[in-house]
Image (cartoon, rainbow, N blue to C red):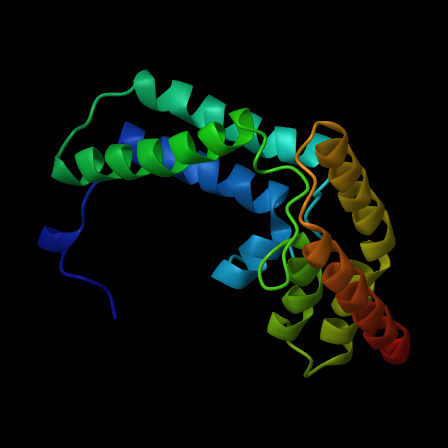
Amino acid sequence: PSRPAALVRPSTAVDAVAERYLDTFASLDPCMATQLGIVGHDDDITDYSPDGVAARVDAARAALRELDATTAADEVDHVTIAAMRERLGLQIELHDAGLDLGELNVIESPLQWMRDVFDLMATDTDDEWALIGTRMSKVPDRAAGYVAALRESAASGRAPAARQVARGVQQAAQIQQLFVAMV
């Protein structure tokens, strides 16, 4: 059902910035796009390499620059600007502190995200299974990029705790067994 015309808010320049950022974000973080229900990126795995991490923070910086060049048209825009500045600013702060590269823990990190995204994908048709296969074929390359990020983080003095590494290795072995069983 459509909303009455009186309740339809015209799109603003701030909305356009937010929409462009969302499109860029979804293309740079296809695992999160799938988690959020954004279609069109289910054939890829997020790039967790140093270059992939940098691309996401560069997109955040670009969106903030675009926001700085816009003027809020209404209260919705003010809220959108505040929310984007807070979230994207935090992403940039984490990056500048070196805390977004080579994340590793036993609950929520790229290790789990690359695995968990498959649980969110449809499996009803041959085409859906083919899409899973396409995405799965990219895991080895993305895992190698993630390993490069872990190494770079460790080399810069921000290695994960030894227990996290040991448990991460166990989880990676379990995930590998699951992928082999699926193929």
